Length: 358
Image 1 (tube, rainbow, N blue to C red):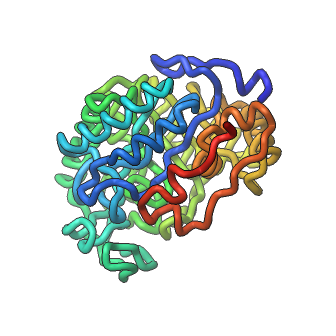
Image 2 (image 1 turned 90 degrees about the vertical axis):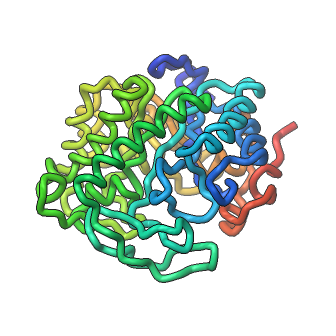
Image 3 (image 1 turned 135 degrees about the horizontal axis):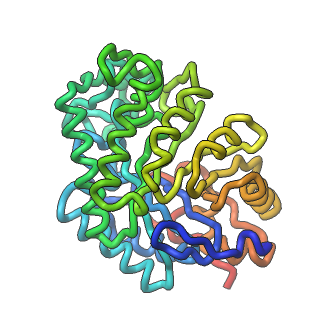
């Protein structure tokens, strides 16, 4: 790797040894109640050489659960499970870990959580959803009341405190990829006529209140936020991406947050540069990768760092390469990611059995 990638970086209260971040990756290896397992501790410890690990999405309350065997952070048992993970990473020489907080909103099912999912409006997911019984039709979510909104804001703040108790240096608020906070942002899923809907100012209100509450709970320099402008994952659609996301970033910019995390960051777009100009703090950019060769990954990192991001977040390359940082440093070939089946089925296969160089 070149000197830019190898340069240490001060992120909030952390000094990162280099600029490569392991992006949050849902892998469905938790217990049924969301408690992290010993296998997960092994997986994260294997990847401890990342400059920063953002651990996979954990739900702040029971109704926020998306799929079977995803992680949670709303009980003492969850805290104890995550503590084993953070301890294992530190024992392996790892640096900082943040935990991503994610509420699925309408991306949920009673067969998984036992609860009817909630969302900004009663608009169902336009596709089937995976449950313990296999793929099933999505159910119509219950539109959240203002009391629900206030309670969910409090749940995010409490989850952030639990994450700190579990040994994480901070948390990432997930406002991307069609989950609850993104559902409030997108006009296709937010049809509210109250103060949490309508104009961009209304639609950004709930995500902003979540971030503000989390920052107040554990300190702004321990909080990041992830956005995915224009993403259509999980059936969301934005008609005003170029004004919506700059408005959200502008509302958050003076909080003193640790970072803004941009999914599928493309320096060839005007929006990338507009967000970079609005955001005064650290920008983590998740580069668009045409393939997963060493050269393509290295080029993607160089593009986003050269365009003004301070840190580059990688997902799939870290799945298959526990020693990704060393491979990129040496220019060594990367392990290919096994077929998608192994990403979410549970067990060690396609999870902790990828080989390191030595």
